[in-house]
Length: 505
Image (cartoon, rainbow, N blue to C red; front, side, top):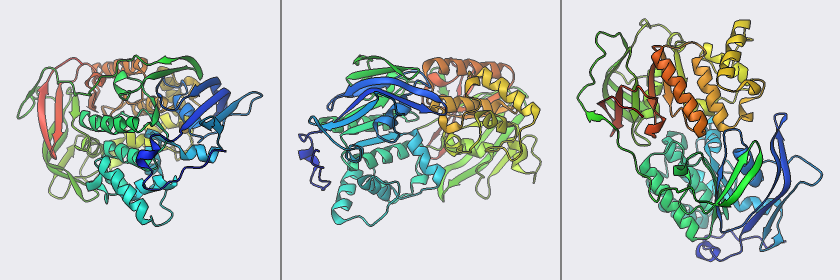
């Protein structure tokens, strides 16, 4: 057995030349939710190489990463073997797990699901102990290592902030710092760049460049070449749980991530109203606070029938909070006014929600109810998480039609956590349509979808727009916006700036 590494704070530079972990699979399969999600995989992952892991939604990418991280066990078969070695000497599973860090949206969602709200400093400290929660006080050496990691990741000023108060992108950065604090040999990055703006992507590029110079390896699952980290040199391609290609990576990930210009957009004090179209939502003098921190200030805005809005801005600008405000999960501070068409003063917000379709990363994180995917879709008719009563015959029929429309009929009886991230996102979009909404509020709706599914969902949204459903879509990638967006709301410095725009995505 290889000698276990010391986790001392001075490990740093010496670790770059120390022997590192190799991972081998021989005819390994994995069965989950009554189906084979991985079948007969054989491969060897050499330390010092950095892999892109590609494949359609449901191909098995996330399950492969969990298998490599030893978070799940292979299904026992006659010849299936998983082996870890350091310099050709086999090591036990416990030692291998200490050398591997898994980061992805599913791990990020876990903190919201269980209400774990550590400070950023404590979150990073848990990475040293490979635990979810801080089980003891950190030693002086550990505190120093955590502080160095926070500085290296640009998180020192956020060290005392609760994890739940961070923006989506800041949470991703904090989880990367947590992983790097333990100086792992391997980083397993599951759709790591999803939902991140250009500035944060550049910061992550620099951090991963430093990891590469230290000799660390990674496997990055991605659907876009843009989302493959710089320095990746190998590719693994999955299809229906099988490895169909492996070799040198030539995907052309750009040397720098840049934000594309907004085509046809011009600054304006106010967007031209759609004639005498009905006002669906009106905000007047709205300040918005989340966890006692002001997110938006003095917002004046109207949504009219026939308009379709894109909401843009950097990570932390307040896009998700703005959509939650429109949906009714957040309320304006005292003195601000929000008017919702059809909702009488004093009426319960549930009455409004039943006519609104809503999709967000947070909703995906919250949906851990032990229900079938069919019931998940049916719950959209009641704006609920799960169903308090058994679905009616009409509910089941409507859910069945939506699942068929979104190519998920075969998943109807499975549980949400048995789906891939992209499959669950499609199920939540189907759920949003279950109540025939007049407004769709979509927060990064195409995150985690493969190119074929992104194109299909965009076409579906365009059909809905033509059928008089009003869209408000928050997105970082302009190519994720459906054609027909009429207006743009840019959030910056806690302010909302209206851009008048008519463009094709």
